[in-house]
Amino acid sequence: MIYELYYWPGIQGRGEFVRLVLEDAAAHYVDVALVPEEKGGGVSALEHYLEGADIERPPFAPPFLKAGRQLIGQTANILLFLGARLGLAPRDASGKLWLHQLQLTVADFVVEIHDTHHPIGSGLYYEQQRPAAKRRSKDFLVNRMPKFLNYFERVLERNPSNGPGMVRTSITYVDLSMAQVIAGLRYAFPTASRNALRICPRLRALHDQVFARPRIKRYLASERRLAFNNDDLFRRYPELEIHDKASARQ
Amino acid sequence: MIYELYYWPGIQGRGEFVRLVLEDAAAHYVDVALVPEEKGGGVSALEHYLEGADIERPPFAPPFLKAGRQLIGQTANILLFLGARLGLAPRDASGKLWLHQLQLTVADFVVEIHDTHHPIGSGLYYEQQRPAAKRRSKDFLVNRMPKFLNYFERVLERNPSNGPGMVRTSITYVDLSMAQVIAGLRYAFPTASRNALRICPRLRALHDQVFARPRIKRYLASERRLAFNNDDLFRRYPELEIHDKASARQ
Image (cartoon, rainbow over all chains, first blue to last red; front, side, top):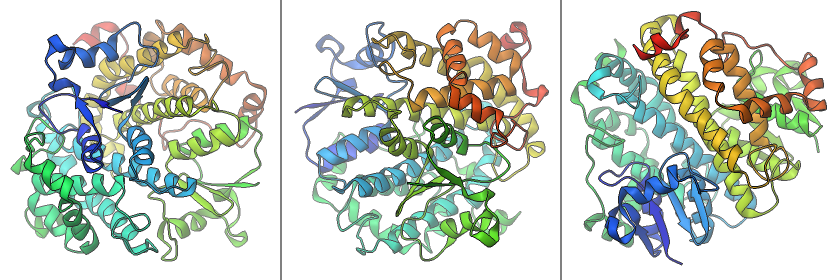
């Protein structure tokens, strides 16, 4: 089967969590936004599914995936579907549910990361909400980021199979997502994330292990992988960063 | 089976989406926070699962559900699990996935509703973030709330089985959640939600139909159903409301 991934061009965004799974599994897929419009691709292909009056099960927003006749939206839901098919999830029902629970917690984390630069409205520019972004980022870096990271570190620690990932003995889709989040946090908040990850050796090792996987390495070296940038989910605005522990306590 | 629901006492919160499913299905369940501490209940029972060093699969936050030996966290994940067991979801895999996708979109909506009064940090008081809350609420009421409501109205309209719910011919867990969201929005933003719902007749009918279901009616009349209140997800702060279309355009 050839999967069709629908996501905005020019950014990694939430589409990247799906791409990492497809790439790691060497699945055949088309990134539809990159196909020329005259060949049925481009942003108008996305808009067709979002706005077309004939779509019986319209997604609310990208990313969404077409697999045969099925149209599947919501990042975590796409991974739930793909994980089972592509060997990136455990086979038993209770393991699948636990993995999905972790992915939904990653999704919550990602919303909070996004909202550090967009606390007032996603339709406004960052520059229109800078003071609020500064306050929200501080709360995020001091309270929320450590809470999430320490949680996932604990999950790794308590995996009775002793890893290398969060569930059972193999790397799963949630591990790919977590490694991507760590890479994104290091881009966005280099100092604060280094400080927070100091007590998370298992997360640091998981990041390295995921990005050392042959297909992921090949993907990262390809032109299909976009660079982090400030139109994206993870953004580097130095004024939002906390540079030392003293200012974190203020 | 007797289900154990773990959620903070005193608020409806995200636990309410689970309660509505359990109540509608007449499932046997214990709301553990309401059981006396000396009988193994109370907030310390929640904390045991959140913080206990012996919990192999710790949830990140309430609500979570115990079903036999399984511990399941994340609201949408709990409903995914319960929906199939309690007859509140379609039976085929693709219908289940579509229903879950809708529930995840409800979850996104709920985050944005919560953040109208807590745009800077969930650990701060509302009073510490009032000006930002005012701006975020305006963006929410003018842009986001109509976008979400019109989306779900469209989903109802396009259900080829012609309802009464969003998927197939029966009420499902996502319909229960949606009705609860409409009730919450009417509490929090009576004027703006009335204006937005004017062009959503199917959502208004869905709300009425859900709250007319005999077991839901009985639940709402019982003391198990808490009133909406300003320590909760949906909060009524008149200063965050938009009272007419002119101020919405400002």
